Length: 452
Image (tube, rainbow, N blue to C red):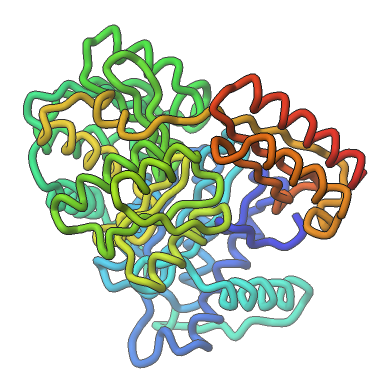
């Protein structure tokens, strides 16, 4: 698997890349590293452990719980809940550590482990590096310092976590959702019970699809990566809108009443204007990545909202928000972070706030989302090239310059090396889809020529 920790924890095929032994070892290593860092100083440590419904989550959860308890950490097992719920409960319960078992939008055979620090925030890179180093050291034979007797961790189920989290979600809404019919696609994932309950408590009439997880069907033809069923259901039921989550419900995409997709950029635009009206958009600024549609940038400029852009990845959006105290940020994929109410992307919270804006404004989601016009965007992955030379190739710089001159102020070019694969991503936006395709195709050929 190379470096174990990626941009969103440790992921791989469960029981092949990500084994029970690895889950146990990483959990013990995390406990020891946090103890060394002083996190547990002066008290008995506690961890919150949750998972999505994947079948492999059952044995991986058992391994994580065993590892933590063997290292002297008391465990609160919250069961199947979304990633943002585990983050929230880690903070709300004053736990020293949170652990979520999920591979998000990945197919069912995959799984992952994500650690949260005290307060529900993602672990710092240096702590992840230290956990990996300690795990490797002990995997190859160095003995652990193990507590015995009353020093071992105790394990109990914390079933109250469900109500605590749902109550938090409903409690932060600026208004109720009475009168709205909403279709929810839960991707047969971690929010299959939480999300419908939250929307109902907020007053919405709820229709659910993809809400019958069996451990094997997560993300299978449904959820935020497969919107076809949601689009059809919204039209069929005459709903005001539809909301789609991924397997661990840290993201949200939407569908308007006509069945048209509303992506993460449009959701950010709608929420930015709503938050500014309530004086909740600090510094009148929203944070997004360089992959955000140019139409989003133009809309924010027109509305007088400052856009700060980061590298691709919600962790970089979050870092920028925390560093400068911004309240709203996210990605086109539907990871939206509302920092006043969540420490990570929260798909259920995002969907609730989007629906609240529809209810409060009396306007349709289609009308609200029209604040921005999505420019045609073409993405081509160019494999088997030397991605390290993207910024230094003179031949490629010439090709990019020619493309930018052709597009002028009505388009944009972005070349980005993949963080995990030997390929370069070519993204082109233009006012016309045919022009975008043509420019993207020529740039992809230039990448092959210059870096192949």
